[in-house]
Amino acid sequence: MPSFTPEETQAILLSLQVAGVATLAMLPFGVALAWMLARRDFWGKTLLNGLVHLPLVLPPVVTGYLLLVGFGRRGFAGAFFEQCCGLVFSFRWTGAALAAAVMGLPLMVRAIRLTIEAIDSRLESAAATLGANPFRIFFTVTLPLAAPGLIAGSILAFAKALGEFGATITFVSSIPGETQTIALAIYGLTQVPGGEEALWRLAAVSIVISLAALAASEVMARRLSQRVAGFA
Amino acid sequence: MIEAAIRLTRTGFGLDVSFTAGAGVTALFGPSGSGKTTILNAIAGLEHPGQGRVAVEGTVYFDSQKRIDVPPHRRNIGYVFQDALLFPHLSVAQNLRYGLRGDGTSFDGTVALLGLEHLLERRPAKLSGGERQRVAIGRALLSEPRLLLMDEPLASLDIERKHDILPYVERLRDRFGIPILYVSHAVDEVARLADRVIVIEGGRISAMGPPETALAPHLHGDETRFDRVSVLTGHAGSYDEAYGLTPLIHEAGRITIAGKLEENRKTRIVIRARDVTLATTAPRNLSVRTALTGKITAIERDEEPAAIVAVALAGGQELAAAATRKAIDEMKLAVGDQVWCLIKAVSIDARWLTSG
Image (cartoon, rainbow over all chains, first blue to last red; front, side):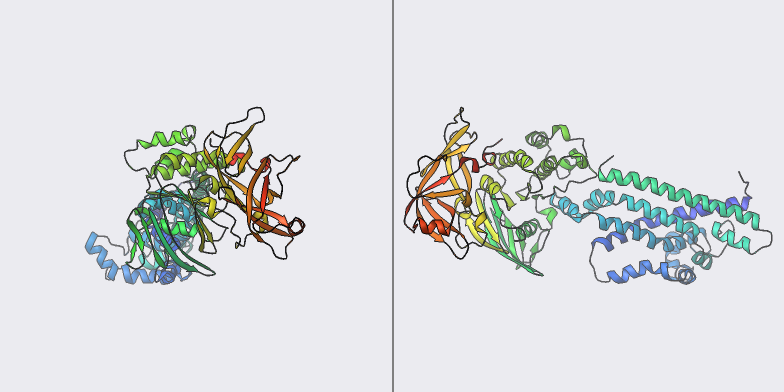
């Protein structure tokens, strides 16, 4: 068992916190966007789809800069959130979570959208003929049947959030104990002489966390899809 | 009463029908792709016709002129789909309760009616095709619909399972007062269940009426002569236990049925034109027991080797017989001639006639 310095422990816990909060916070948005893209036709659908996927193809530093402009204390959205709920993003761990969420959202939406599209939409029609309104159909038919996709999408987004670097460092910088996640700490260690040993410890930790997340998603997705298909 | 007028166009397909249907079973009968399912979907609100009107018992669900389009979940129309469409993640009991209306007192009765008691805890994946279809029927019934739509509920089942389900559908028809719109392309099924038949061909109504006339030989029809059928109605006589036969009493003669029928029960049979043999004298020394008398009303012939002879039986019902042109010429058959129509008892599948 390797022993970690307090700074390393802090970075590891912060990473888990940032990635966990980012994943949970984006889940409702991810599900809503995936459902809209899979099941609804509306004006501007292509545009919305493009916007969701933009962070996937944009240089992360650009995403980070846009977040800084929009969600910084003087940014339009930043000022709004500070006034309404005292929520500050810039140079806080919440900002790191926001950056991670924005970067992870396309992966999550993609995974959930694919499962929703794979659900026979006539099951939803059958529910409607039984008197279920769209709200009830969504929560009693669509969502339970999409559960494997929700799990897969969440794990993907969590893993992406753990490794997020470019947008985070641009938006909230690398402040130990506040915004310095494992990825940022590793980058910092590459910049100082004699940091190799600590670097390897942190690298090992990210490998272990990522593998565990992937394994967990495999197991859960398999169990869920069996239950959803009615075999368990 | 159901009023439906539906007009819509899709690429390569147009539908333009208008009909009313009352209590009992109204069958929408026709070949695959003729638009039957689209009609059901439009009535349920799952498809939106360009023009038309749908009303059930005076409540308007759709009216293109008045811009009324009630969403499906507020129409209270039950729908039994061809492939059941049970919710795979829910148990049979949860499926049945999904649309439960009222105080739920109908639950146990419906479960018993459909023989589902031992299946309640199971998941749909572990049901047979026939069981799935029974659950689907129960699920629709428990939502206490004002109208029940059934889209080929037996089509995906093998012949034995069909005969398991048919009695349940008959019980629905006889015990609940719900009007049923029943889509099918199987003539035996329609003849057994339907009180009224609407024949749909190429998105249009080509015939309407009781099964005996709507399914009867329409000499203008374009189905192949090989598949031409007639529907006759009679009352079952007493069962001959020694031979296992029941006579069906008809004005034109006794029709021998291989099997047991409930005595005095009004029974419809489907007779394929290819199973009818014509004779110009009363037959003797033949193994066929059934000989119905009638007069030839029309002969449909062209370049094909086979022709169709339409016979008006004593009592008025019409029977189509297929024969070769050569036979017709050699027997010098002509419109107005008196003939005997011979039907082999074994050509009538009694399983379609008896109820549970």
